[in-house]
Amino acid sequence: MASIQQDKIIEHAILSTQKLRASVAKSFHHLQDGTSNTQDDEDKIKAFVSKLQEDLSTVNDNYTELERFTASMVPLGDKAQLHNSGFLSLDPITDKTPIYTQALQSYKWAAKLHTHSTQALSVLQHSWSLKRSSGVTSLSSKKTETTINYMVNKVIVQLDRQYPDISITKVQPFSNVYQVSLGRTLQVILVLRSLLIERVIVRAHHEHILKDDGTLDIWAKSRYEVFQKITDHATSAMLHYDLHSLPELSIMSFMKWLHSYINFFSTPCRRCGKHLKDNLPPTWRDFLSLDPYHETCRL
Ligand SMILES: [Zn+2]
Image 1 (cartoon, rainbow, N blue to C red):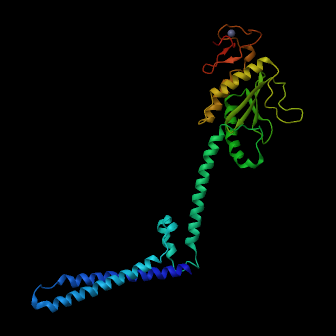
Image 2 (image 1 turned 45 degrees about the horizontal axis):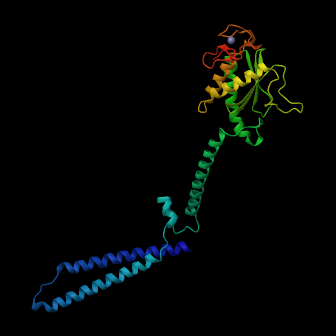
């Protein structure tokens, strides 16, 4: 009902504007003839002034009427935000088909959704690199996991093709932990977040990945010093090759570096030429040349 009243007011305001324009035009029309300033025409002058007063009085009445209608009109407010869509509110049958009200509501929701999603995106981007995973992905993020799994599987297929002597297998379903076997040399536990490597543990083949209670053990180091050393170097390599913007290149570069350990026990040190030094084989691999060095020979 309110909108019907508003429509009536607008209609009357338009009529008042037309009346005002007509009365102003009439006043100027009477003024343009003017009158002669002589004694003989005194009656004419009086008639002219009287007519002018009458015209101005009409203009004043019309103006007051228009001002009254203008004061009783409701400002457009939010309607202005929708630009041309705001004209929908002028539809006389708004009460029966509330398209404008619904459009306004949708607009508000869309604007709110956009604001919240922008904020959520910035928060997620910020926490992405800081949050550590527990090694097990929750079932609630199944949909996201499907997309991530697709990306990870694609890279694993590529790695399998490139390095036939490396096997990569997922330790448990719904986990982001992978077991990488390097021939008969060693095994690596890789904890991934999407394609980013979060943690690397190098162990002997016969060392277990699962604890006695069947849960994943992604923290315990190998009990062999040689694999502890390689774990430290692999962690350095993980950070060295880390490229947040190019995760595929990052993991491929890391795997190339890791593959250089394939003949670990039979490759001599590049500097001293010995197989053993301090009872250890050359555990370090150069990040660029991938050449083997003893830890004390690399400097
Ligand atoms: Zn050496």
